Image (cartoon, rainbow, N blue to C red; front, side, top):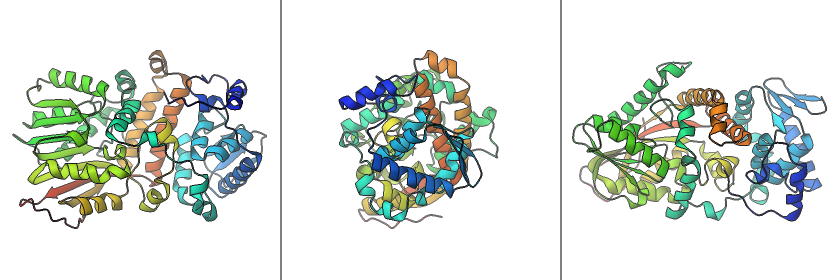
Amino acid sequence: MTTVEPRPAAARRAVRSGPAGVDPARWPDVAAPPDASWPRTAVAAAVVRRALDRLPLRVRYGDGTEAGRGGPLLEIHDPRAFHGRIGAKGLIGFGESYLAGEWDAPDLVGALTVLAAHAADLIPAPLQRLRGLWALRQPGGRRNTPDGARGNISHHYDLSNDLFALFLDDTLSYSSAVFRGFPARWEGLAAAQHRKIDRLLDLAEVGEGTRLLEIGTGWGELAIRAAARGAHVTSLTLSGEQRDLALARVRDAGLADRVAVELCDYREARGTYDAVVSVEMIEAVGEEFWPVYFRTLDERLAPGGRAVLQAITMPHDRMLATRNTYTWIQKYVFPGGLLPSVEAVEQTVRDHTRLTVTRRDAFGAHYAETLRLWRQRFAGHTDEIAALGFDATFRRMWDLYLAYSEAGFRSGYLDLQQYLCTKDTKDTKDTKEGHTR
């Protein structure tokens, strides 16, 4: 499931004493604890214990001692391994320690929500300023060049259509829904996904005869719904698995004459369109390519056109502090990914396009509920997921990914935005200062 990199002989020998049940061929960095020096492990232990002692958590260590100020329980079964992994790899080590079973939490989302709410101050300020010295850097091979983006997208979205179908609703929408109220119920998820899609299409003013470009196909639900309105849709994806199923769904809906699904990078898009819609695609673009991405929206839009985006965002100061850091999510789930901030989106639009941000609406709480429903559904299909060939470590990884993401939205560390960007009818080359309401 992850790229296997050569490891030193000492690390390979350590596999013998790694966690039971972890396949070292598929999960080398989980099966083999990292080579962490004693001083680095000791510093990590001191920093982590100090941070946890100040949080509204209840921390129980393997020797039975407890710490914290009360709240969700965090059980650290193997403190030495836990601190060693964090000392060697930071947050990647924190995630790999979970996959190795060295820590757990009965209420995983609750514990991670506490940690996410204090993400900015978990590490002391002096160490934060030295992040460049201790934090792992993103590997150059994961840059979202045209070739790199194909590999990064395939890593996640080409896992298995059958896997995604086990925990998504019948619309196969892998992005936040918009609910009428909370708590959300599984029975209402498909309708909530259609509500989200219809809202985006309404913002883009998609109707009879609209020429629509969709950047990021998913499994085709938005394209199908737009075509049912009478639009002519060109949808772009880099996932072969998604394209195959999306085309089949389009044919089944009787809309093959109105929808073209192309295996194509957004940078290779051609033609002129009345509207462009892109749902949770910018997260996979990478900071260095944000200007190219937004210029593509601009260049593909006809004068007077409308671009509508749905995007996950993070606080601007945290984005600046962590944008070069290699994270657990990037290593195991979304290689090459980076969440923008609201400020970064609006600055890029202002500085690199002729578009104007004319509306922005936030729906972070809706994503927390969407993720909760997905995670519950995923947990209820353990046997079917195993039958597809995904082992226990993968299932534990996916559970952490969904819980980690839900916690980000519940804590407010992450948010979800829907943007409307408009293009002047005169199509001048002057850039304009964006605004929101």
